[in-house]
Image 1 (tube, rainbow, N blue to C red):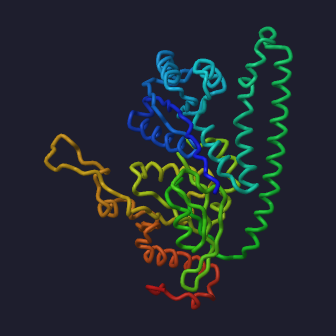
Image 2 (cartoon, helix red, strand yellow):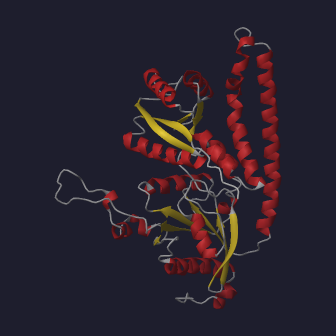
Amino acid sequence: MIEKKEVALEKAVLIGIITKDQDEIKSKEYLDELEFLTFTAGGYAVKRFTQKMDMPNPKTFIGSGKMEDVRHYIEAHDISTAIFDDELSAAQERNISKILNVKVLDRTNLILDIFAQRAQTSYARTQVELAQCEYLLPRLRGMWTHLERQKGGIGMRGPGETEIETDRRIVRDKIALLKSRIKTIDKQMAVQRGNRGKMVRVALVGYTNVGKSTLMNVISKSEVFAENKLFATLDTTVRKVVIQNLPFLLSDTVGFIRKLPTQLVDSFKSTLDEVREADLLLHVVDISHPNFEEHIESVNKILGEIKSGDKPTIMVFNKIDAYTAEPFDEEDLETERTQKHYALDEWKSTWMSKVGNNALFISAINKQNLEDFKKRVYAEVREIHVTRFPYNHFLYPDYEEGQ
């Protein structure tokens, strides 16, 4: 019997800043998310460093004193990786690497690494590779530090610069080739979408790790990969679903995230064609997450960017089984009661239940309130179908409970 080798998690420190636009609470939320990203990528966050600043240091992102604290900690605890919560410029990354003498990543680089691990199909791999090349291009100069001894004068003339220019040309050619390949695959996928006929298309959208794939599995009775990690799904999966006797197509799409790298939005816009061409969106939200309202804003912003913000949408608040309100002491006069103290019934009576013509509250994993979910989706899909094919209205009667 072959023993499975346990892969040791890579030790990392996380570094963020507190500014007037990003207060202490928001900074902590972002670092929580960065820690989850680190875990998803195969790392382990040992310690966090934060610094209050008006704006990031253009040379080293954080101040020199704080950078020394980070360096001493890294050396004392044998840390191999430093991860910054915001995207670093090529110069910042180069300067920090020289000071810390360890692998330096930023949020974008970390997300790209997770995408590279998760990409299964040739299409997803091509999109990730394109995003990585576009991220790499302005940073090539910092990768030629081993040629510093051969530097020329002010413009760094000599063999080192020649090598950099050669690499830049190779990367530019690679980008052009990948874009051409994506264009070809896009045409093939457009033909596939066209071949699906006039069936109503429904797309699951939402923040990453909100339970879209789990809901897809429950509704379509399929085996889409689902895991409690960020970006478990990269490839769009489409399944034919029948509720009662009404068929429609349901697609599961890549999850969104705050501070989503520009390269990824551009590269994955083609994947999100399923969202663009959908007749109905199911916006899935993890109500058990303390920042779900901000997640909704992030998703709506990206939907706006891909010109899908005005589509008919049903808000689906998932994971009601995991939702717990923070306890509130009525006798504590100094503490103000906030939304984090709301019970689930109170949330149902707020703005959210009115969004998208009354929201749904379910638990996909425990199959709670799925009958209400099916009834609502059936009604919406039926209305779209009957509008498209008026002579079919008698084929699809009102939803019958328990079917």
